[in-house]
Image (tube, rainbow, N blue to C red):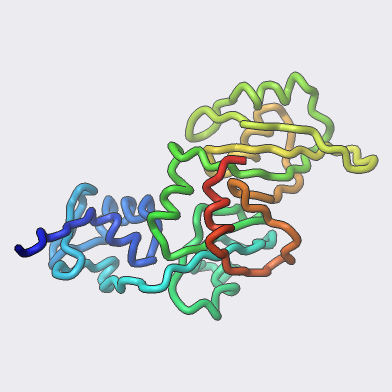
Length: 244
């Protein structure tokens, strides 16, 4: 008996190609950048046959990846989390020249932030990390101007409303660092909205002076040098999805 045809969702097919994450694939479909067998597609629920249907993104055919790639980078400050920049500013692409395949960043770090950044061509894995329902923890060291009071910090623990919705610190601790007149904090969040931590501290009247992501799940940044890129083995890959 012949096996039934295995159709998969269009966004998964795009993500499995290693082009972008599934969430970004949804955006490409909604923007009309995807064609299926010559027809532009806007519906997210469309299913395709991975071996028979022709899918183009921005006019280019997708290439299914064989080798799954998992990487971590210590992104320096002053580098964009994107593969191309029309203004010619430094991007994370400069660190990926020797990688044998096309990968994309999992989430992002702002231009003026540094620390742990993941890359992969595994759309399913990336989607698990970025999906808010997964509640993957992201841990940061933050230097803020002045010394916020415990009452102010409690506001962040209870939750504040920023652009994109209400967010809260899963964990927030003050760190003693010598006699610095400005406060250092260790903060853990799960939402990962755009410039979330900076917006959170702005809500209590504190400007962020330095921001470094030191962990995703239980995967630690460790002693990587700025700009250093390393491969993740299976053990480290699993740590990303373990709650801190």
